[in-house]
Length: 473
Image (cartoon, rainbow, N blue to C red; front, side, top):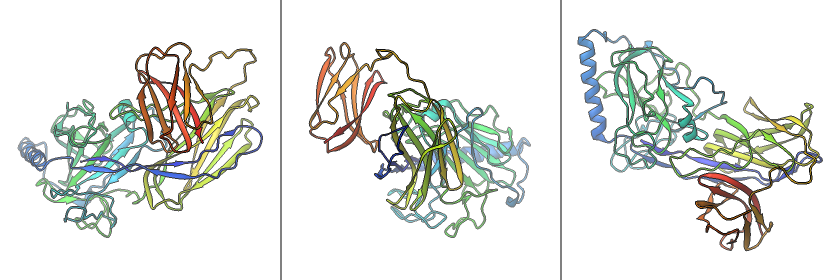
């Protein structure tokens, strides 16, 4: 399976200052990204895996590593992902697809809850697992090893595959994935696929695994379009009877939930809140995202407040608050999603400029959503009273507002491998061009862009050197 999960941008943009009168929040817009699914394992590869696992099980039985299966009701599954030690993210995942319970194809979809959060293909493939993706900044999270794959139940390792490339993006890769397979005490079998290369547990085939024990890291190996875990469960060692661990009215495979604590169908929540000196930049897959996170700001600096959510539903409201260093409220506002039924993943931002008379010290950005409160602390420094700036802006972009053209002025000459990126407040890339080197002043034509607000970034050898908001009138 591969996926490009559904991501939307919830944007509110008013350019307020952190002093004086509180801003008036009015403009609210939602922007969709595309969704793409593909078969994670070919029929041939799936049959090869099943054959190998059956052979391994028989061998382990003969050697005494596996005893007779007990009644299946003794096994209760825990969530197969866990934040790695040392990280403190509020959340880190979303679900892009459940098991498809409608055997017809194509585009005949039904998940356990009678919805359509699954997929099939014209070749006769029906999705057979639960796909759990990393959110936000999935590639960066994968590179950092931020999320562990853990065993959902006690069991025995009956198969392992590692060493395959884990940066696949297209969903069409035909090489094998990295995976581990666990046979539980009741005879049921769980598959954990698309793992990160060389991250698998050292436990050998036949090794005993405890519930919650580390198995590997989330990756994007095999036919995958982004870092996620494919979690697939079978009723017994024959590997013919699929189980959907989620209980629901349209689950025609099993009547009871396999989860110790089944998550709701829409698991709405906050995954992350943060401050940034510029909007995040998403390079071509599989390069890690450029987060542009920052927690220290001085007068004249721009600050972006970002909230990353999962399973946002129509009518749900996010409450925001900025708290001054003395603990009093500077301002608060709320945003309500009203543009559609459901967003698997979404992010919202607000933009501000730090003025000279801003309150100095630690500020807090607070977000409340469905009973969960999250705080993020950022610092505002004291202004420096000097005639010249300590770090003058390396690139000057003018005029602003503008109509048809902008000028980009460099202090010396345009370095080699310098890109101009222009994207709208929805995050959609509008322009990506290599700038002519050995010039100091460039004139860029904007006539093809509609009137509105845009972010311009100058990127040198993959590093953002300058970012500026412009208004095209």
